[in-house]
Image (cartoon, rainbow, N blue to C red; front, side, top):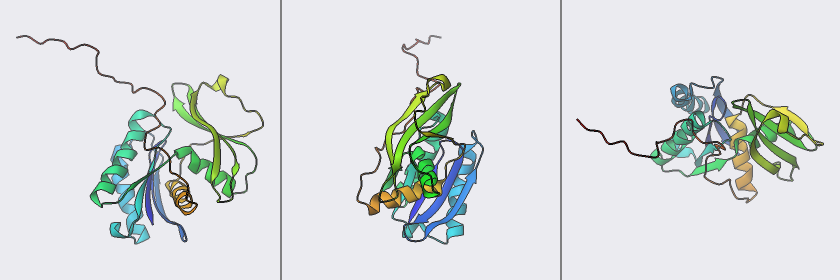
Length: 206
């Protein structure tokens, strides 16, 4: 069983199992209050599932893409919780959860997942199909693009405003079951943070 956490759009936490599926999930649509809700969502998902931290095999972290401030909160929460209960962190690309849902619900063919990157830009990932394990096959992205630069081709475009931690967790479970490698353990910010340290050091005198 896995605890999955994502904060790339809103904030979501879920407990999943390969055989039982999504056992419990909690979500907040607030795109700016991640820090205020992530702890409560994790606690509520665990309570609703009846699963204790000791029963977990690992903690799934949605690696984005997503805006810097929100995305890092979910990843930090996943890492801190995993450290506290001595479980591994399992990184998963957040867009893969959206594509997983679409193909699992009967979608076929090429899919373009699009999410809001703010500043009149989008995050995009392109998928070709779901493979034999039920996992979406990502063929491009995630990338940062302006709306006018997005090329559809033959793909179905899916503009998503929510990422399910439950689906994120199921991607992790199926990836493990199929013996596939997990995503890189690096946040997909795709853009520099709004605030950066100054290049020089100003001397302060009294």
